[in-house]
Length: 216
Image 1 (tube, rainbow, N blue to C red):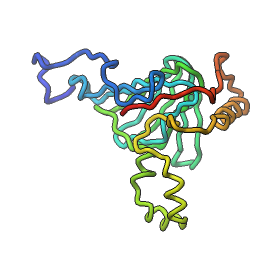
Image 2 (cartoon, rainbow, N blue to C red; image 1 turned 90 degrees about the vertical axis):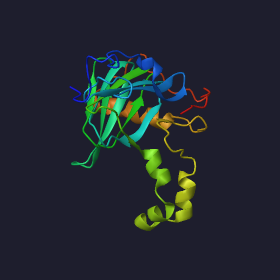
Image 3 (cartoon, helix red, strand yellow; image 1 turned 45 degrees about the vertical axis):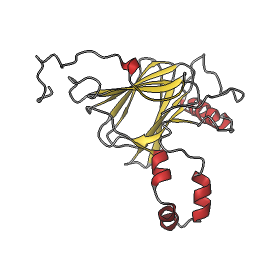
Image 4 (tube, one colour; image 1 turned 180 degrees about the horizontal axis):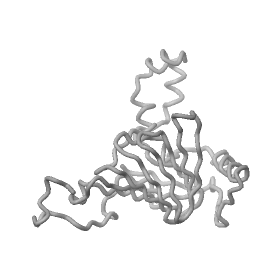
């Protein structure tokens, strides 16, 4: 229990509408709501992100410095990918409704929706989910440090990361002109090679669709 909270106080909260607590919104099909102790003050070492995605949208590579994450699929389908720091390998876990994937504390990971109307619930063993995003690492690390550390041309590095927006959260950006054939192909090949059958309602990305700008 939360030790410094008076549960008899009128200020003690026991219910909350997560729909009223957006953390970011890309468009009406791709957004994230949050529930933590700042929203519901009787929570004790638990929090969640309510995630909605359309096909081929990605929760960008990131890690949680304060918690492990359990990803539960409510509807649709997604692939949860983690970098195992012990094997140095990316492991891909497809999940459909009723299935979960566990991301240990501090592990680098990302989620890709493979169908429209995907709804994921990310549950954390912390009073509020904290995150370090790949886009922030790329944009906020000084270019001269990256160039010197990895022996690359600094101008080439600057040009490569120029399109990256800090705190992307959900990619690709609305301005992206690339098609998603590569991501579709990657995961369809993954399903084939592992014997996993993609849901019958899997729909490839439509390159002619328009993606309105998100607000954060």
